Length: 111
Length: 115
Image 1 (spheres, rainbow over the protein chains, first blue to last red):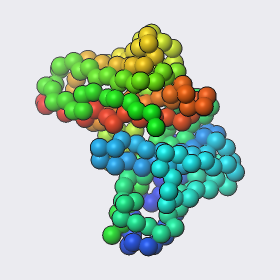
Image 2 (cartoon, each protein chain N blue to C red):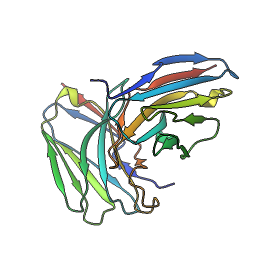
Image 3 (cartoon, rainbow over the protein chains, first blue to last red):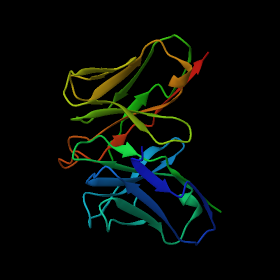
Image 4 (tube, helix red, strand yellow):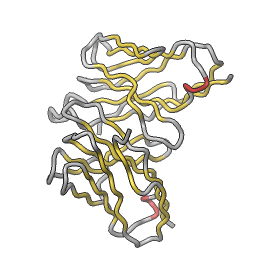
């Protein structure tokens, strides 16, 4: 019962450090997404991908980069972490229709 | 960006009661989705609606796609303690460039069920 798997589940960083969040899906979905969830803000789209080798900006892309070298993986990078990037990050995937399937999230704290 | 107005923001009910929540927008949506998020987990899809006027059930849950295509509601009948969580509506606005995969989310309704 894998679906969408996110690693790591928790991480604490210092300001200025870099890290990469990994998302893997085993449903052969074309589309993948990265969201952040903050209290009172709901889910906001950071970046998304409509297929292997493609990426596009979402609603809040600044400070993040992504890569989709393989269809099943979607990586989210923080080059220089800032306290404002403390959040819960969710990855999702979908086939051509709208319904997206979510992972269980990565809880990231930046000190 | 597009906004989905979800209400109420929170609800406190007794076990066994029915629950109703809704989602409205100034934009037309061609799909409405309802998700539930349990603490510490990701959102899980409950119901998907694809046609205006559509009424769909999933167990004790019933959702409807509004005729105007600008709203949707979710009802939960005979609530139980495990219904506790945050319920989100979501959908791709019609003016999202024709892409059916970029979703706009409501801010959620927090449901608490007292046993």
